[in-house]
Figure 1 (tube, helix red, strand yellow):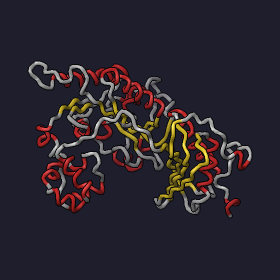
Figure 2: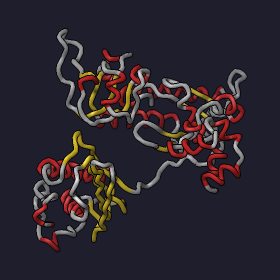
Figure 3: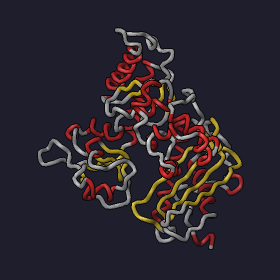
Figure 4: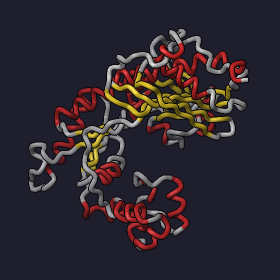
Length: 398
């Protein structure tokens, strides 16, 4: 999907079409006021933002000014002070995600879900995919690509970009080549012209550290990576990754489209607008942690899972990350259980520094309805209302 969150917001605020818009820094409500003309909403400007939030996504007009997802909002404000800042609305994004995937499934039902705004589709058995149309051997599959785009547009009002290639690696690359609203067909013979001039980091799986190591070898483009001796890549990255880099640079990938995979864990976390101290700000931290546990419980219920391993994650003000986990006697997805056991995890973590982030995770998942005997009740008596459980209680651990 093209700039998915931002594009959903533009459906809500069509007056912002073509303007630099940034999504991030908080969740609804905002904006709610109207401008003096009574029509357009009065939106916040990036220059007025104060905090530590980051950009989740941005319109293409904003990206042209140098801002991008993952960039701090304060840094982005220096580049695009007049850009409009909108809060996140995940309910709307999830709703449009379901709509676009359902529309695609009507055309091509073999789908691998890769997140809220991205899917892989196997077109092998879609009728007409292998047809020659008007002398074009790819005419049939090209027409299917157009059908997919139109189906998404009709269902959501949004545009998407489609890459049609022999494999997932090439399709991931190709779907980004002609954004927004692109349709790119790329066959092996096209790789030297279309892909080899691109930066090596464009290959999904080459992160910043690997890219730095490639640059140290004088490898900056996909073409240079393709030309690199295999033994050199193996010597630098090891056998598995060295072989993968060599294959990826030549556009080879044999991974199938996987229509279902069990999640390994489900988590919720939040980054604070300012650093919070476990002692001085425990009145704020407690409700925040409770809400994360409740959201995690809701996620588990919605997806039909229970779990037996609860973990917590803390990021301190010096950016160190600490995690702790505990295995439960019995699987659960009950919010009070999650909060109690997550609180036990917190008791084992040093709480002597300010915190930037806190999170909770459920692992060791199994399909279930959560109708289990309360593992904590038999040992400790009835659960207290989970909004009042003492998580950052220094008197207990002193």
